[in-house]
Image (cartoon, rainbow, N blue to C red; front, side, top):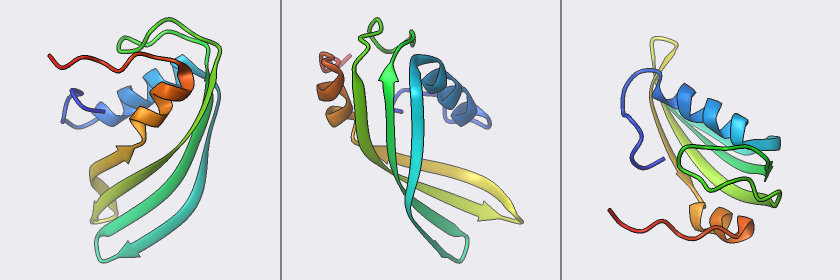
Length: 103
């Protein structure tokens, strides 16, 4: 997510926050492509907003389902970089959230 730290382990904290904020959380793998040291995953992510998150409003109880694309760089059998693109606008609209204002 934009504004999150770009350092080792940061992705794990982001995922932990998502799991805390969304009950009935599910990730479906719709496709995987690997070439050289790059793996690309196309995912469908869904859940129900049941918990708090530092960057999100109070729980709404509403559900969402969005697509995500994750790109993993792999070297020596380890993930060395993660980049992701998510339909954040679609998620906000489904959950009834206001779009964040620019800082």
